[in-house]
Amino acid sequence: MRHSRSVTGPLWVCAATDRTQETHPVRVALGLLAILVVSILLLWYSLGKGRPVPVDTRFADGTHLVFLFIAPTGDGSDSLRAVVHRMRESFRDSARTLGFHYTTLAVADDWDVNKAIDKLRRFGPFDEIDVGRNGLNLGLRRHVFDEDGPRVVPQVILAVERIEMNRHRSPVLPSVIVRRLVGVSEILAWKDWRGDRAL
Image 1 (cartoon, rainbow, N blue to C red):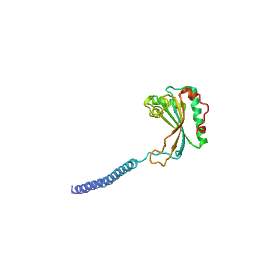
Image 2: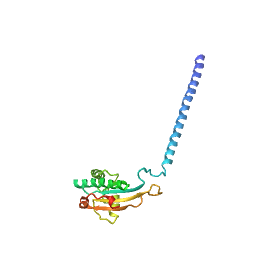
Image 3: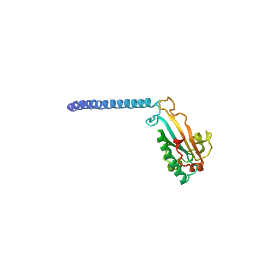
Image 4: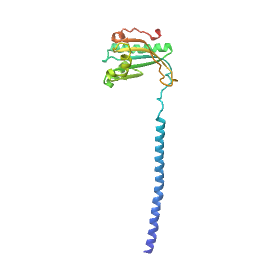
């Protein structure tokens, strides 16, 4: 009996000591992991707060010839789509002749955003599109309602804008409208008019 007690006592003490030694490194590892996670979150927050919007400046700086298409309310005819395609490529040639960058924009005022995107895809492709909200559409308000031009769609607007990436605020200087075609009949009557001949 005395031998049994002498053996049991040390084994219990050893077992308790072993558990303490096993859990201690685990607690340290969990603590270090928590500190690491918090540090990463703080670093991510500090880097993200107040950073300027990233802009790819490789092809932005300089003068741009801007082709803006404001789509018709409906789907538009095949002939209208064909003319818009030809215009877009012709003005690309004009920009190349002038040594300008070339940017294509499009606006569609359909309430259904997906429908508007599908419609513009048939006229496109475009570098940037603005779709949805019908008459409240930001592009429509800016280029049709807020300007002196007629409040009619479709329209094709050709403009020149200067972009200077070293400016502290907006790098885009006010654009100058070179040509505006209003309504289906004017757009369909277009005959290979080249932007470089008017600049």
